Image (cartoon, rainbow, N blue to C red; front, top):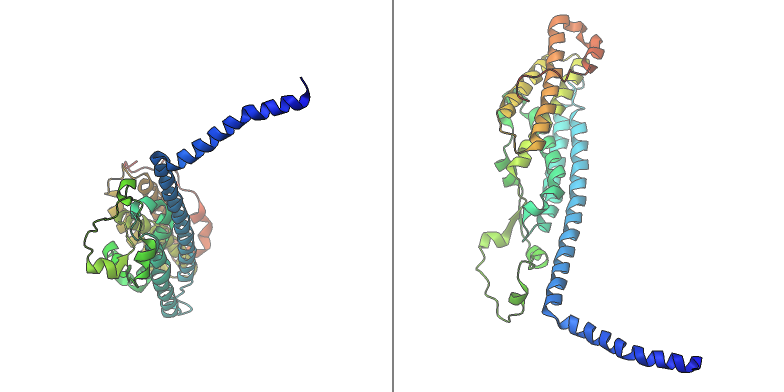
Length: 307
């Protein structure tokens, strides 16, 4: 048998297989199961893209919040720049609420915000830390009662809807394939306030975690004040930290590992601050010369029975 006849014979044998493959591809496209999984793939791609966009927005919020915290640390009684720095910090924080958080809220229109909590959680906690630090400087004489609670922040993160957000961002992925195939879909009546307004959800848990980070900045504020000779500020900051720790140590943190870790860090900050105040009381004006004492690590064996 010649080589040419063999090749023709093989081609004839492969032709029915190719036809079967084409028929199977055409039938798969019409298969309702395949259609359903194609819809699921589009929903997952849309969710992942939205998640990445929120992560980028949260990263911008984190960077700006850290810069505002560094700005607040430049407040110095010797320079008399308190009012100027506070005005600039408050303006920048309001811009973050007006633009950055609004962009995140637009991404979450029609979505379950708890599904994207890990995406915006770092930025929200850092912002709460910066905002509460600003309020501490602004209303420092009134103690911890002057800080805004999560309801006040929630009221500031309600935005007016221009009408484009709902048409572009409303998610119809929750509808089943059978529902989308129907020509007539009954729509539930929408509230007028829901159409005109949308908001960024401030989770109370995120607020508690963000305020817990404030204690680290207060500890730095105490040590910086010692270097500038403001010993009264050191004592006032220590009292505020003691109030924070008393409140947080009474919380049940068995189901929140992150809060337990933050309370442990808060305790370390409080011990460092108390060590500073102890040296201020004992050594008086010479306490600033003993800065190396405050850099010593606190023993992990010290325990008050909480851990």
